[in-house]
Image (cartoon, rainbow, N blue to C red; front, side, top):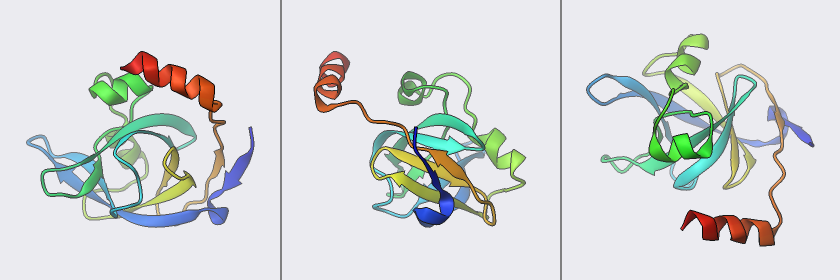
Length: 137
């Protein structure tokens, strides 16, 4: 698997905000940074999946990091976003950095001042991807 340094990819600044009645963290990313739907997110040397959505306030947001695509899609299971925010010593009102590793598919999440090296996930060939899409429908 090829790897990329955070120095060699496009990086955008996102904001950490509180969301919902329980004030859980969410990452608000600039419009056009990430597509809606499930994407791969590398955070703290771990690969997660996140369901990127447009919130009620029309902001593009990530509200959770999950172990696999199904859990991200259903927002089920252990949400690791709060854990990541706590581990990095971040909180609402602070920034996070979003690295665009593979546009539309894979992203990195890191605290300001941190460097990271990402393993670039290989995308399946078109025929396998179309079979997978057919199975999802």
